Length: 469
Image 1 (tube, rainbow, N blue to C red):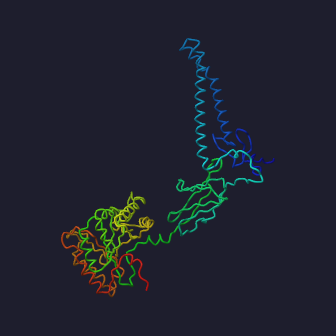
Image 2: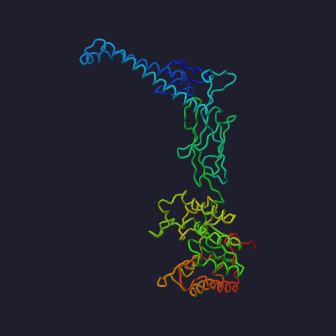
Image 3: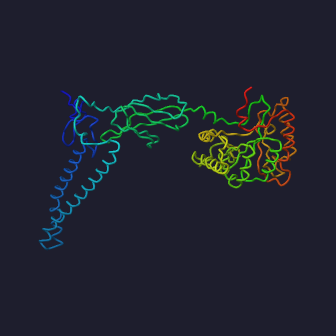
């Protein structure tokens, strides 16, 4: 038994027949609608019209038989009994007319929407000339990147081959991201910001008849070397150089900021300050002074929120409700205000409030260009360079006097033959609730003592990128 060929594409085997006209059609010519397959919209509309007319005829046959007896009992006038079927028929025909008008409007609206993608014209229903047009292939061939390839640079280009008359749509999580039409059977998608790590993107195609089908899946692994470097937590520089950084956090209070800046200017030291957006908003003049005196400023979020569950379970699990968008808005909002106040960009560093951070938060910050800066911690509190200057209760076990804090820092420096503080990051604050014995008063003695031991005070930028020997 010979196989039938498509009436439009003589070189293609027919898969089925049109439900209305019975013509053999291939896969590319098939229009699925109203639970049947048709060769064109014209045949589909004819099917709908015939179906409606058939239903009207059936209703007409049933109507007089079901209604005459009831109407004759209620209304004795013979003219009303005879008129009601005619009125009912006119009403039904009017209803069908308006339904067809509504369907026609919907069809025309659908055609206008599809016209942008399909460029429909009257030649779609005409068979192509065998010498000029080739049958439309429904497959997509991905050229780059290779399946599950490692990609290290952005933007990532997805390149492939597909028929020119198809519209290709790039999907992510069932949502369209980009759309394109192949040129000379070659298409390209550009991903400016692919997901860090494993990526999976779907490519769907819209054929000339408006059918949508899944064509291919693009999988690759994206690892930006710069992003991976920024995700690393930094809390200490190299230990073979006697360099250390004084860092100051500004959250809500500034009662120590003025004296600290005076001391740093007196000794000619440039430091790194981590400021919240609220600090910048409340103290714009002080922020401008920090920048004017040569210090660098990193991001300390907008309002110093809790980011992890550490206060609840002593674990740095991501706090419920802390999303990527919410966290990145904390950094963006602060950086925008800093630029408006000072006219400069923030240093590419951030410090987590309360020191609460994890790999997910560091990755979200790295996507914005920030690297997390902690402070130097040893195996126990005796090796920590956190001055704990924010503790104001003398009865607390964490409380230390300014003299004890000075002795603690110098003791760290004197370890390992005087190299114990090499590469260290010291944490202090621009505000404190201490009413007596503020910690910043030790700075002159500490700076003098450390310089006598051969130490140099640098910014975080200098500590992250040590000088070449």
